[in-house]
Image (tube, rainbow, N blue to C red; front, top):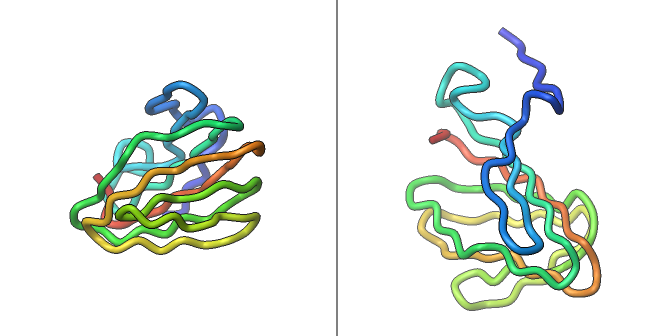
Length: 111
């Protein structure tokens, strides 16, 4: 059955100094652990938390802005509409410079 998730249905999952993680969909919202979609918003000169997803591949799409992803210690430049693919177990962190960075994150199966 198709499901539409509106802005008022999303949840600020975590936030820190200059960054915010918003859950767009997860098992609770769609009623099944099929997938998770999150939106990351990082203000200029911010560092997100270091993260690892142990058993899922991930697709990360830059909605707007620029910055970098530090993946297993290697800096990878992120620009508007770039896509980053991560394999299970890779450690990553988002970092911004002078610009804000917004990323759509998706992985399946969900939590």
